[in-house]
Length: 289
Image (tube, rainbow, N blue to C red; front, side, top):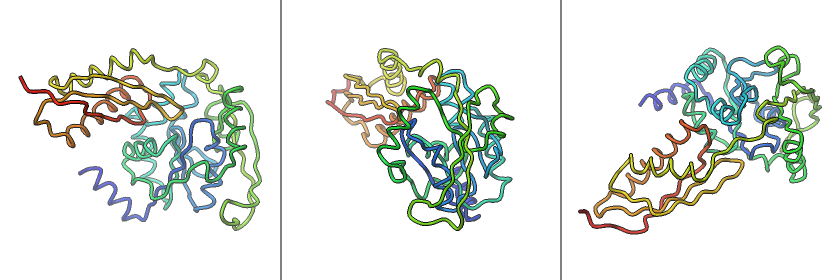
């Protein structure tokens, strides 16, 4: 109910949310201003920061975190104090359009839920605004050099995060995708090197993740038996397929959905990793004892 009322209030104000999604390192932050210019977007949420124009309005950057899991939590506004600060700033600022940047549509939706703002009305994929060659180049730069972009000028980053500042780049936008801008503009972006990029990405072993899934299933319903777990991971997060044996009479639709949410919520909360999807397969039914 609270979520519904909040969304109604934002919509009454005429606020529309957009999303820019793409795998990690594909150049989303680099092209964020291009998307903002195209759709007349005033505010951007990127990696834990609320940005307006060339200024950081509120939040904290995931780029300053020491380990990757902490960075993921920051980007997802896991801490209450962090999301409350940004939520208050959103209430205070006057704007009509907001861009949320994430590695997937699910991530941007989760950010919107945590900040109590409407879900995106339009999703722009990085492939829509960047060539395959540009994306590949960005990915190589991320892997080899560990460089990340924050879409605000160097002065702003030096003032707020001097320890991770690396360089600055200036981009002159003569045209935007789909239409020419009202006037060409020069944008400055900051290049940073987070501590977690220097140390490498922290992941979780399949054995540990499997044990957490087993525990979640057992805690959710001890009558359900877990028969098999398949785990895949990519830059967007972990994808799980779990095969279950359930008792006759189980309400499949509602219970399966609730179990998916239970697994995702608990694993993300305790580990900081991102669970992109949980697929549930009912392999067989068991007679109740």
